[in-house]
Image (tube, rainbow, N blue to C red; front, side, top):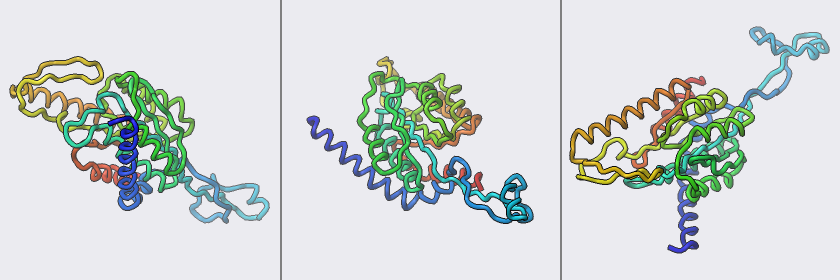
Length: 296
C-alpha cells in the first residue's frame, strides 16, 4: 500500500468511526453524559425578591437598598466544560491479539466521548503522549476538533515508543488553567505515575479508561513462544504449556489491575476497563450512571 492509499484508508476509517460515534453519542450517551458532568461553576442569571429558605449570602445589598426589600442574586449552572482526551500512543498500544489494537480502540472511544461532549456544548481538546507529550490541541468546539483528534490518534508516530503517564499528567497540570474534565485513555503499563496523576486528580476531574487486551488476562497454551516488549525490544522465551507459568502470569496481571483500581479509588478517579475485543459500552454507561447518581 503506497502513501496515498494509506491516507485514503485512514480517512475511510475516520469516517466509519465518525458515523458510529455520532449515532452512539446522540442516541445512547447524550443523556448519560449530560447528567454526569457539570460545568465550571455558576453564572449570574437575574435578581429576584428574597424568599424564606433562600441563602442569605446571596442577598444583594445594593439592590435591596434601592428596592426597599431584600433581593437575592439568582444563578444558573455554567454547563460548558473543557474536555481533554489524554491518549496513550506508546508502542504497547499498537498491540491487539484479536479484532482491534489498543490504539484503534482508543480512537473509537475518543470519537464517542468527543461527540458526546460536543452535543453537550463542551469544548474538546487532545493530548497525545508516549514517553513524553507529543501533541496538544487546546479545547475547541465543533465536530472538526473531534475528527482531527481521531486522525491524530491513528496516525501519530512517537519518536520514543515508551510510556510516561507522569509526564502527561505534569503537562496537563501546567496547561489547564481552569478545572477541566480529563479522560486518561491508556493501557497503564507504566510505573511511577502515582504522584503526578494523583495531583492532576486533585485539581481536575479525571476519569481513567484502562485499555485491556484479552491475552493480558490469560495466556493460552500454545507451547514455547517468544514474548517481546514493544517499548524496550527485550524478548523472553516462555513455555505456555506449563500450567504454573500461565497461572503465575495470570495472577501477576490480576494483581496489577487490582492495584490500579485501588489507586484510582484512593484518588477519587472514576474508571472502567475498555476491552479491545468485548463490548465496553455497558461499562461506560454504568460509569456515567454512577456519576449522575452521586451528583443527584
